[in-house]
Length: 282
Image (cartoon, rainbow, N blue to C red; front, top):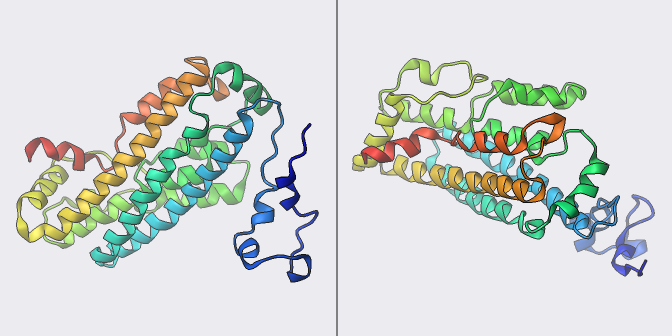
């Protein structure tokens, strides 16, 4: 195998310090440790791109959880200007997340099959990432079934259970709409947050008022940024479907699930649904 001198960045141990030539850049970004985390197990040319892109996705899932949890706190505190800035950053992160598919978007079944064989039948899809599930819960896509693969890891399972039961970002936004004088039923703002959100005509009517009445300009700006978050999250999911179809078609996925059909069903669950349905009346 040809020498890969860039791998010399990798340390023999986790030690660090100025005595071995560590710079501020290397130390701050943990560069040497970062380059120990890619360990291809096949000779498939696309595997390194698959590993790196998936790790980058994980980092963006974590970043988005950090940002959207912040936006949720800001909405809860009635600090809409701060929430708008946070959501604007989140939209940029989602655009970058969409791009993570590009490095292996043209991978063929022949490229993918050796990787899949080494991964086995485990939960190896990005939608089975615990951080992705935290993100889905923050966005309001609640399902207790999403906890099942993590029962064997109690700490992760506990964190996901807490995230499932907590109000989503959209739940807090609807609470804000009620505080700003829009008539929403108590059953919308005070409910079992672990249950899937169900669209309500009263919520759709509230968003129609927000967009029609100038006194709600700040809430309209919030609605537009939430729509952008929903839009770009959906685009990432669409790319996931496309890449899945390209790499192994309609074959059964992990645990014999119908991977393509499952991903298609997910696209029928838009994030922040009334922000989309209300546009018919605008």
